[in-house]
Image (cartoon, rainbow, N blue to C red; front, side, top):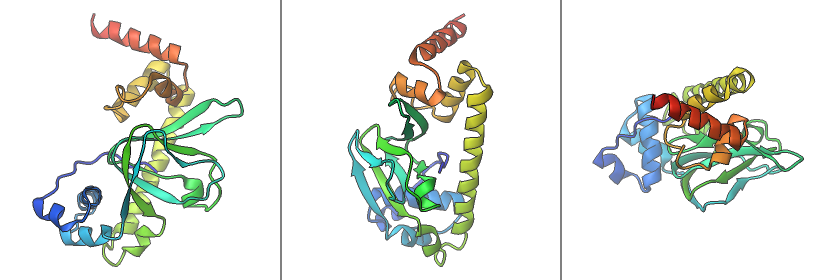
Length: 216
């Protein structure tokens, strides 16, 4: 599941009404997307818990049935698979104010075939799969938001597949920078290369070529 970054503008009263800074961030996201009151947002997130993950922690692994949705307050997660030869294939990164989940477990209730781990120390809000219907009496439009997020996720994956099939390495890298403008200095080059479906050496050449174009 992919959710684009949104501006988080929090009033003092909203911060004071919420027990956790992380909950305040997600509440601000709900206010931004649904135009609801601070009181509604505060009540909606009051039952949610936050969790700290250290760099390298594995949140999900193949075979797991853990059905959690992560809203990232700080830090960075990644979603990836490992093939029979031990090679990693990164599907998605999830920085601050993004959501991340595994569709196998959260929607189809089947064992996962993917990994989720923390690239940096991360604070994440944990949403269970019943969260959205459970708060519908507080936030009537929440199910429409959930559907919108699912459609956005599908659109993201469609574009991702098309880029991998038809775009050049340079085009893929420029698209990566547009989607994740703050990650180029936070993520190792080999991980970016894995996400782009190219070798680290090819990524290095792309960066050098772009640098030459930029300084002409």
